[in-house]
Amino acid sequence: MLVFAHRGACWEIPENTLAAFRRAIELGADYVELDVQTSRDGELVVVHDPCRQDRAELGPDVPTLDEVIEECKGRIGLAVEIKRPDLYRRHLLTRRTLDTIAAHDLDPDSLFVLSFSARAIAQVRAQRPDLRTIQHVEYVPIRRAAELDAWGVGFKDELVTPRGLRLAESLGLETTVYTVNQPDRMLELAELNITGIFSDRPDLVREVLARRSSPEPVRSRSGTRR
Image (cartoon, rainbow, N blue to C red; front, side, top):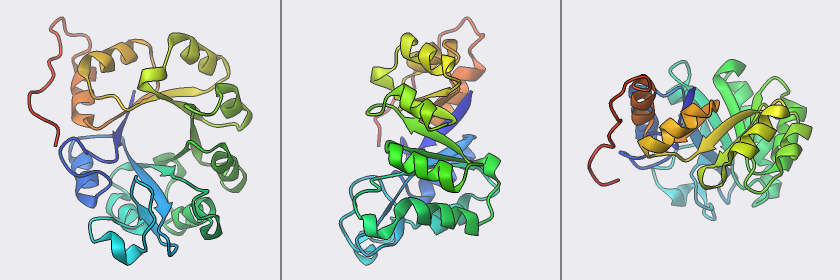
């Protein structure tokens, strides 16, 4: 099962920062998931919340997409989520994200492109059919993801059901679930043979998977999320 470090190892370190991505590499995740959108003045920045500021106003802890790729290239795979492509349509977020990926000459096997936007996924499929895409299906029907020829779907953990998983699989779609941080739930999903888990705690996912055949229960680590 693929382990996606959700916004980096953000259980320990502030999300979508270079430090969080470096920590995810140390913890053995397969991919780091990151949110890319445009700043108000058109820079491709890696941040989750709506970006209504110019790049200079965001501060040094918000990296650019170029900086994240340089940090991760050859060290870990990238799961790039196209975030809010309609916020500043003039900045052409999806096209420019794909152009940036191409400029870095990344191996397609080291990449996923994700989005809640079916329009963004359709554009990725048209511009870069060699890239694997994941259509999040909180707002988009599973059948629509199949029509887009997505590689897979992303289910919100609270909404995933065995019926939904079966439908996705029957349509030839791989299945991923976000965002899973509790060990018992990780184990339940592993037993359902999903393809990948997005987690703020990639090291804990690795531990659960490694101990899956052990009769001893997996215990959650103590401590408060930071």
